[in-house]
Image (cartoon, rainbow, N blue to C red; front, top):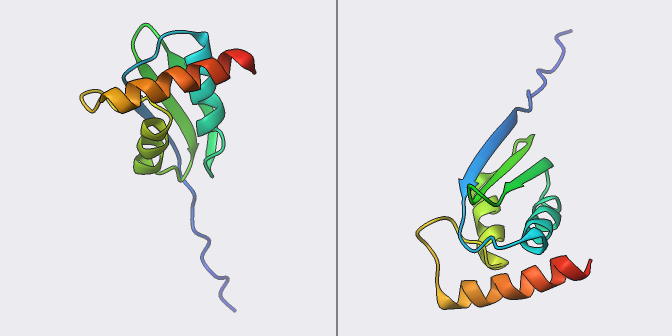
Length: 97
């Protein structure tokens, strides 16, 4: 009997350049939010480069971008007053935790 073929999961890395990273509180909020996404294993935030590097298995770039935008850190070029305000709230939450 033939064995059913296993689907190979791919370990991938996505780097996204974002708006509104101001401090360690922002970095912590981003990390905490993205680690909740299925398949995400590691999150590295670089404040100086305004980048977020996400590594995981079968991760979805659009899901990551959507989550970042929802917490106030949209992809570069997609900022708004509302997203700036959300980033201040996320930043404060990150500082408290």
